[in-house]
Image 1 (cartoon, rainbow, N blue to C red):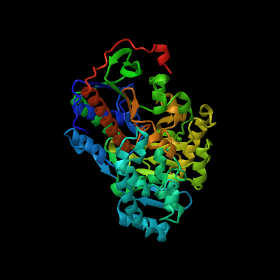
Image 2 (cartoon, rainbow, N blue to C red):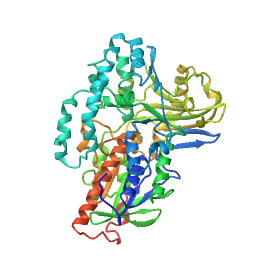
Image 3 (cartoon, helix red, strand yellow):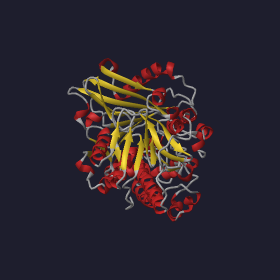
Image 4 (cartoon, one colour):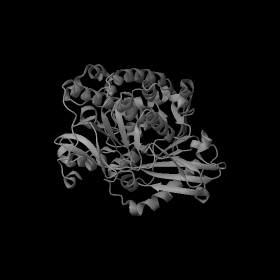
Length: 520
């Protein structure tokens, strides 16, 4: 953050997800009057924890916390310590990887034990674990300044930070190809590359830069926020309110209001609210189309959004179960026997018949996630987004049955008979209930043509700013928090420049754009 004071400025933030909450904290610290509008009854967006009938608690989206340093720095900038607000428990093992029909691996941040785990399936590859970590430690050090800068102008791609990082970029290599320099066994490469699914991408296509994802896990750990990931969002909201942020729950924003080409406020809850700047924290393809008239987003008209490359989607099951689930780990990932084919089918819009899947059993660490004698399970199956040909109105029932059969590979036989609560979320539900464009759960794809300058800019233009997975630097909680710092800095710089030139604050008048034309 800069030292610029925003006293006297009023900022409207649309969406109380992690990016919106982080931005609200930093703007409030800078002295701005912040109004945060959230359509739901609770903060967090998809990063919230809900309590279902029967007392079962589920994270809706993200199920763990990675690289808490950035959020700790945001709290510190507000004069607080993150650990005083939420308890983050480091997991070891981090997750249980099962290579269907071909062994398993308990991932751990302990390097010696990690080497021993790798040696069980590929002794020669174990000798290269430390070299991988050392090389990616250097790569992250070079790329952190890149991930901290904005890319709002074309020449940003030739910044000193970017030039310094180029030798580590390997732009023509995928994550899997880059890992071949260290690991010959495809199972070991998957242990260090399945994390690209956090971006909704294939390790066989995802740019090699993203080997840093697994490095971050093994180097810095995977954390469970006690009470669920929503505990982090709730802690941020409590601090924001203490700092003067007004959080308007159950208050959807209908559209951004403009005078000419400048945003001057929002319509929220049916009322007009003036603002000197507007920050949008929402799924990019859905939010900007709904909130911003096409004439005000010349770089991202509807036709370009329609052609943008998207991540995959997910088929979700949230299950409240009577009884226990044996020695199931906190995080378990089953990688289908032909993983490469499985993930290729998803990218081609084909629904796999033998999918990989992920299970979170948070109760292995946190007893508050289910009543005594019961278990809460979160099941995620990667599937194509809604640009594929799947008719989920008919396929949901079949895929539900398939998911239960796949769970049997973990020894969870006759699980359905013990289910006391069940909620299914298909790609259609992600679109219709959660406002996710085409049900693409992880937002825009992170290929080279949609990164850095080519991703929607944090400074979207005309007094509108973006935060969240749809803008630079991209998806994932630590990256979104870094993006919030970029967006906050740009907004402060712009308002400071306006003050220096003594431009009057925009008066709130009737918008030049008629309501009918503003809807999209």
